[in-house]
Image 1 (cartoon, rainbow, N blue to C red):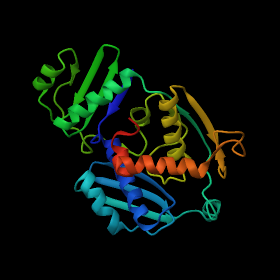
Image 2 (cartoon, rainbow, N blue to C red):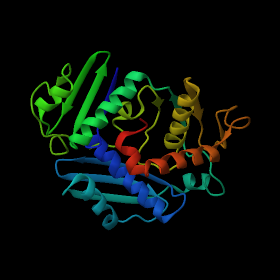
Image 3 (cartoon, one colour):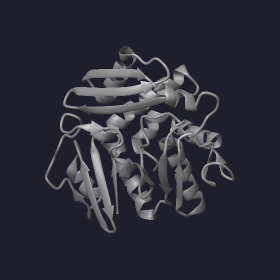
Image 4 (cartoon, helix red, strand yellow):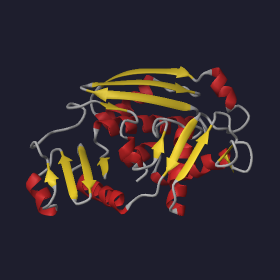
Length: 267
């Protein structure tokens, strides 16, 4: 059983805004330290962030308007805590505590991802989809329901009728759709709105990729300051955290950046 939401779901709009702001930070520094939280809905977008570089409201407003439309932006950016910043001062170390489980994707999960992307290509507006064995549920806004029924004759489509969706109907918040982003993989944090030094980004990506490669569930934990992960207490016989960050960097770059990564998550 799996649920996917598409990039126009309000929560994904929040994730995409957060990702685009992280992308902006990476144009200012090679390894910025960024944490962004976004709440958007009903004509207003609230953003609070911490950053090692200067990000201004004038830079953020066009990002929000491009992704969420004509909404008012309430923006606050503060410097990262000096003690946390010191952890990364001389080399890349694990930027947070965390637990992580990477799990191989099932055929059902990959199938629903393909269905969701196919529908979104035709109807690029708010949508959510569930697959549970033979039961397929499609809730797609601004769609020709009869056309969807012709393509998916056995699906339950828009059970309560037509709807418009988007942030005028519902609110969106960063990292509220991790099940859609990660399938059976598990994290104690969130994927979006953070730089690569954060374990919530890099170790989640690393664990997920390793699970797909090995076909086995990968369970990891880390403490802030760890220089090695996937070994003995983060100290020895593990993967250098710097290498994990570079694996995640290559993955994000291949996706087209943090905003593009936020559209669908890990699958």
